[in-house]
Image (spheres, rainbow over the protein chains, first blue to last red):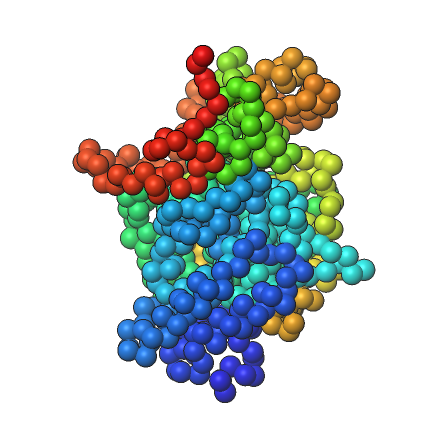
Length: 498
Length: 95
């Protein structure tokens, strides 16, 4: 393990592991054991709901066997990954961090996690999340909150963001080099920003949604977390692709995203949307955003002001559309076919008892909002109105992308906040996604890149938003930001140092 | 528009979520905060605008209408809280 010993196996990224395995510096089983040990050592972070050491060791050994025969499968063969517990995994407990899915063991594997498995990736466990991916802090998990590996200036525990907080924490704490998340309104990008790592939401339709516990079907999209843009690109290349089992999955070819990283940003037109300057946003986030534009300009990009006039309406439109779709999707949790059942005298009573007890407060809130806005007499006033506003938001982006190739914005309006904060004010919590929700409403790809630290030494990300199915340009621009930012700070808790 | 206790009772029934009588008022206030906040959408001029139901330009893919999977009741029923033979079991619906 000479090549790896200087850095330590846990600090290696996806590409590093691929190269080390290819060179024979270490085995997939060694990398996997280091990952499992790090997960155990960092159990206090509560990043995982279920660890899968037996599956991990079995897949790592199979990977080593393939490689010994000269039949390695590609960049992810033998690479440990964590999977958000929203992806159904065959034979492995899948909870969506909800009480209502108690004991649910799927008989099938989600397409995206199957794509990873079939490419040789080694699943080490299922990560914690906000219940049914509804939250921006991981506080709504039935399995208790996740802690951010970064800590506050006075040592206080911070949230990792959400909803994919466990996956973000697992990658930031160097438990594994990459992880799967899902992003309905910012659930990959916001935790990536709060944990100081890269998080990517692809274009709607790029990855199959089949086998992912559905939250809001017109917005949900799977994506990767990693500690570098290149590693995120390698992950997406394996995750993405058309799937006949998801009729919204796009038939587009998946480009070689790693190859697309070369080329730089000379001549690239980068839009700065005026409406993303929010009242009350910390000055250091504005300064970092300005710095990001300067970095890209210095590398030859053309910086252009653009306008997205309906930006302020994205969040309220989202909080009609997403709960409406959730109320419909979550109707399936009825105590009949799987998970929790709380008995009642009648069938209706059993449904209501099961759902009243099985859903946490935020999920009940959103299902009831969604039920209300879809109910007779309110459907047009709320739901159809929100869908029309969504059209306006999409038009804003379409117009802006006539003049620019990508948009640069902050990822989140704040750094990581203390565990327990914002819980008594749902709208304050929702505002965490103010910069990420518009891309979901318009179906556009977005990526968060760690770009700097705030006054308390906590990470802040910058977001790039691209044209539909132009993740290649997004990755290329993100890598330019990454090189200029040279973000090397590390969190307090690193699993590999347990 | 705002919800009162009766509205919450009706929505809770539609959503099949048990809400205790004492909780109806606090839940109404909680939901009203959010409803009042989303009301700002009324400021947006949406005259003549089509509602967006899908961001994708593509047409719905079609496939041949044939059975591709199934015939495995034990796999399907494997997570059932209660089953009788090859059926899910629920409380009695008809007397």
